[in-house]
Image (cartoon, rainbow, N blue to C red; front, side):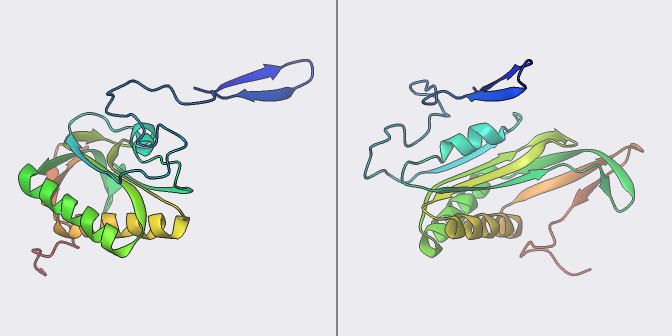
Length: 189
């Protein structure tokens, strides 16, 4: 953690940062490139569907690599409105075996198209209150263009192909299951 110290007499600020991130051996959030002089490092894909609150920091730490100069993120959050209705939360459901398989395919497609190092795709299931993350995608690469393009591809393809359903919960005690317009199985109304 960093700390900020303010000297009130001179109004100067000094940032203190740790020399290295604290690691917990065997932790699910141990950065893949923990040995900073690694020349070769195995690429990893981390896919997780969970009812737990998502952490941008924890997911982004998973894709850190000393071989990379870029980490690109997409964070999808619950907004408080839709078509004039006040949204209080979203509820997500997924067919997990198929959803996990489809996300693995997306990771494989990304690796065919861009020179990326690590990919993490975390999606929340169950209730997601306003302003909280429902999805976090983090991708590392040597240069920014690859990870930026890969993150965009990942979210667009995920919305089109992965069997995840979203229900919007409204303030007036009503709700509505939403279909992804991008979904290949969706029909025009």
